[in-house]
Length: 475
Figure 1: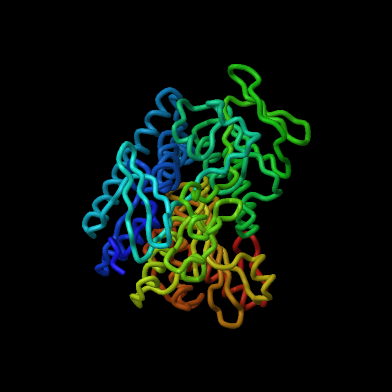
Figure 2: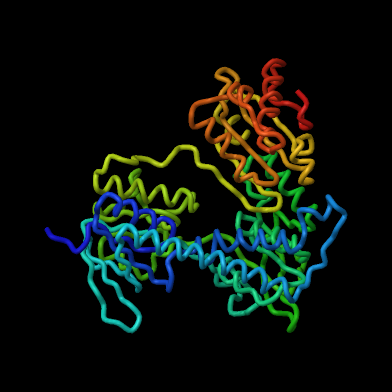
């Protein structure tokens, strides 16, 4: 059968862009459909890049990084801070949108703007605004529509001072007091960003631990860091009601009977797959209750010609993994024999203050799997670069399997953690271990040098037969 295109991609976020470019790189005729005015998806417009840009702007405007080092505390101009942060966010967004357009154009991808709807397993209708519907046929369809904030019915989002993780990016002023509901990654990141700017932040979550998927030690170090930043953590308690108390106050009532009064509330407890209106029922695909699609190991849905990748298939819902999933899906669809799987070691970066990142096993996972391991730590306070930048609380933590001496987990908290973790990831990917770090020569002074001293600490634990070294990093 003759098709208009070899591949139609629905969604122009990170997964959609990379999937389209990968297929076009191998000579396939590709069309990409994006409903929003510009490509980039939530990653560029409402999620990853905007929130991280705002975080960086907050740290610069507040002088947070240097306030303790030089004894200088900057006074925040509350009226000017918000527009300056939003201006920087918009500048980064524009640059990334232009890069995406350039990338799609240089690969010869044909772009359509409009709402996509499945007609059958090989036909997608494009419904542009104020224009006739078009039908595109393709051998394969790649769904990469991303996700959107979960909005419970009992949260009064019609109040302009009640935001989700998308609408908070249009904030019109810097609040004096903010209640954040949900201590997941997004909630913790925004709590830290606003706290760095001097906002009184209360973080509420029904769970007892912050980010429980982290290594427990790192979770606790993060909690302590957030408390030092001025964040009040109310854990193990749920909200029961949110209501406007007065023109200036929103009252959040917790199930323990206490009240939290604030001028803004941020709800960020989960996201749903963006699958509504795609007409998936017409082709026999049924999303789950959170809008996520089921796929096999090659990211193919129950309909052989339709693949799905990225946030729309659920966990881990990271831009980094979404891009790789799209490449794997396209290679499998066309039998290109190029990239057949997503790497097994997925790094996680949490852009809180302090920053946290890890790859591999947590201690809790290692114990559950009966892995015989030791731990080595190195502290930024003992590192020359750490002294220079004034980060006394950062830690590089290595988990080393006793018999093989290989790294099985790397955990970093502190400045540039999401960058530093890739050193450990590279060692693990290549099957290396603690001895490779001992042999390596690191630039001096650098935070990366912490890897060498964490490795020495682990060797000391191996020599003494300890499960782990002491918390102060001594062997």
